Image 1 (cartoon, rainbow, N blue to C red):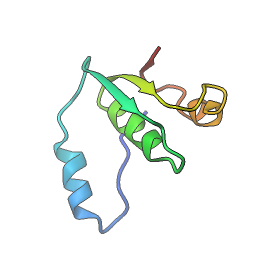
Image 2: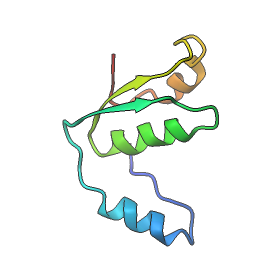
Image 3: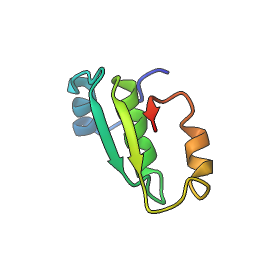
Length: 78
């Protein structure tokens, strides 16, 4: 999956993404996928850099199924 790029004109975000260190094999816990896609974006960002991701959320897996389906291919661990 190719790395995501920020919208044009957001130079601070561009710099942060370009300088983000690889996270290959590092374990990361994302607490909450969020109702508006923020957590999904974080998971994609971390996955693109090789992190091993665990997600925790107050909602059930069934409630999050739509978002989890869109994260197919990301390095999410149970």
